[in-house]
Image (tube, rainbow, N blue to C red; front, side, top):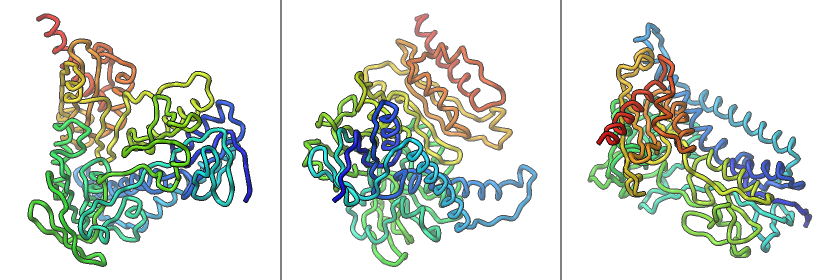
Length: 460
């Protein structure tokens, strides 16, 4: 068996793993290896974020073309799933090629195959024994199939959906979180009969309930059958012809059940962590504020560490872990002000904390909301829906968070993210001049309302 010695071995080539390897090289690690069991880049570019968003974009172009008559554009269009899939595959291939070059240019060894620990700092992968001075675990997470009678035959994970030869005609989307509403809109935009069920009270419950109610109404108007406070009880049938029974007593014929927001678990099962002393919990590997595990020479980053399951968080944590593994002065992880984007069309976005969480933390939140209705840019582009909510602390005037549903919200939210992450105040936001006509001008309206509430308190 071939043997190799490395300053660092990184398990996983996703955003966290790539960030860790590159950061370690910048910090002075000479020999770095990344072990990948599947495709380079991990889940996000190959199965999750990029493929889903590429298909969503294609579907939204189809919907917009059909609705273009009101803008003076008349067209007869049809949707071709195979062309959309081919375009998605081309995008994925370009990203993979880019990542391959990135590793080669940085002098990072790429090892293909499953890896497991032989002992604390020796691993086996692809018939090789890898001896490591340090290890970073960045193996991500995997979807869980709920224990519902009959579900396994009908279940399709997001990984499988983005590789299907044909789009489902009658899908049941399980879960009204970020992934669930994205898939619901994707399928509905191409005329599938979509039902979405969720056990909660409102969609994407990380965001302001009033803001997400607009998204729910929009999806419902488009034809998505949304059932809140509802669970899947049983699935019967086979070969793409299933009947589902729901907790509200209803039945429905479907051709597949899309697992969207039914839970994920850290991907650690094959690593044999018991040989290392690295402790785990249900949410993921136990790490300290510097992303070090319970083994002094092993770190973990990204989904496997049990924090926010966002690619940009994984990239941030991976880069931090790679730095901390070699730095004399490690840097603590800071997850304040992380932007959250749901890529519906228009998108839903958020950052920071909401009113309820602020109260739980002992703060005194004030909230201001404004509709996009009547805004020049919204009217120009044919939108009357959309809502923006901004939360601040009444005592300090510090901005705590925001939620927004409407066109360009995925870009607009980053202005608030900068301020939230840097402990900015309402006063600073009020001093900012926003261009007209732009979607960012809604921020001026909401900031003025918050400023008025703060002034009233001061006067009192």
